Length: 470
Image 1 (tube, one colour):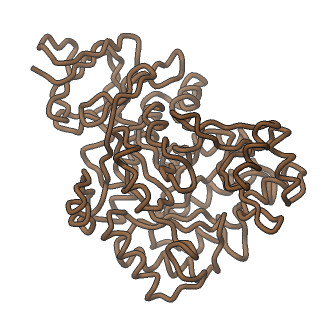
Image 2 (cartoon, rainbow, N blue to C red):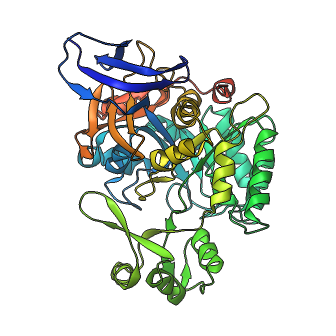
């Protein structure tokens, strides 16, 4: 008897070149059988006629944090059809300690943020301190580090040093481009690409964030970003499909703490101070993240401003600043071999209510900009390959039974299945717990803490840049 059978869905699996109406069975957390009709009995069945099944969605940029976001991020990605995610800032310890309360059944790989006053003693840490931070992160269960250049910039030589040391220590390293010299814009992206050179791995976060008409127009910026990535295959990249960004709305000494927030206020024509931030919320240009008891939502207008003030500005939120043209170009651009220039779709979401890989990704499919097969490559297979998870990203017999069932008519996730267990069905959350993705250096710590985990393959440049060609 199988644990689960999904019946009658259109199954789309790029790796195995499957695009047909089939049944899928799962047993002991693995794909057990795929056939036109499975007549065996099962403990649970899902009628998925008229739906689309893809390998479990992997969001390659999210925020599961509870210190700066809120405790419902895992619920929000499960509702959005996401099975696995790469958290891009931690705090690592905060995520690990919040699992009993916040777990929804998803898989999480974690990058801890390199930030003065939290994980670093200064904005110019010594190489010894940098290396100690990387090693501690890996030994604690993370897979690498994140540079927060857009929000909390460091001098370029420090970021370059982090990239070199991370590569030396076989650690993932991501960068929200930006430094004390250049901001979170196309100039900052040029700087990040130069820092990585042609031989060092670097994950440049949310490419669309550097194409917001801050230096030239958004079309030219997007086209330049595409050419930068084409000429640097050592760089992994993702972009998100929502018009909303995510940032901190904290104002200290009458100035926003985050450089990104300052840029957004200036872009919208608002003063870069307390009164400007308040007016942006009242006008609906900015939204404040609030907890409704189940998930996080954005609140604006006078009610949003009142909440922001009641929290002494200690809030996160969003601005609708991502142009449609750059999001479209970055989502669809290809290399000469047919692989995607921007490797994965992402959300930079989780705790932010912009988890729209399914909603906006399926709109691209309906528009004809992506095929369902290409959607599955960008939403799952490329991320699994890069993270070193050979049992994810496809629906081969014996692969992990991580499955996303999509309602293509409604452009919504219908069900989320992780390890053969249904964690979300038709808008209802069912899953609990969390599986942490680590490398071999974090195993002992996670075992000691009784935290469920899975071990990724060792870091290798060839693995990360092994892009799938349709």
